[in-house]
Length: 157
Figure 1 (tube, rainbow, N blue to C red):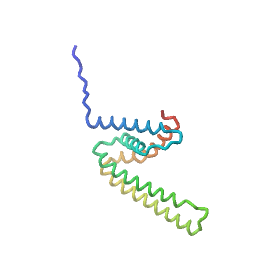
Figure 2: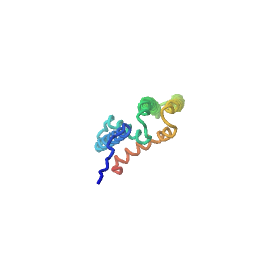
Figure 3: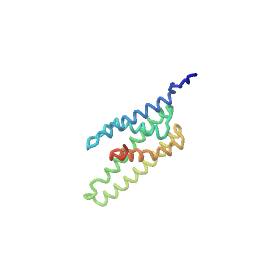
Figure 4: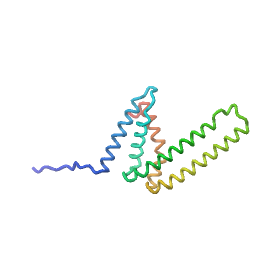
């Protein structure tokens, strides 16, 4: 009887996918093991997010090298804008009508900036990703947050 040889050679892409899957599983396991009001390690959460996004939109190695700096910059800017908008809503009870009007105008300006920033991000990211990957990316943040929530409640185990 002849023995069949199995191809145990890992291509760089297979190795990357296995690595990301293991990284995602390890990071999410560690993050979710910290239930009970303990803070989640931001580095582990970031690693889980990277693995989740990379897997969901099927990022290739070449794409990932160019995509992550763009995405991280866009995300940081977006989070700063969202915090600024949230800050504008603080202390409403004690402000004057003029101040409230000014804050609403500031919020609208921030919202316009968010839309403009997203247009720029999409134009830059389209040089790296396919449009299908970009569409998938738009829903991933919600999906990842839902995944974390469900895991935290014990339903994702």
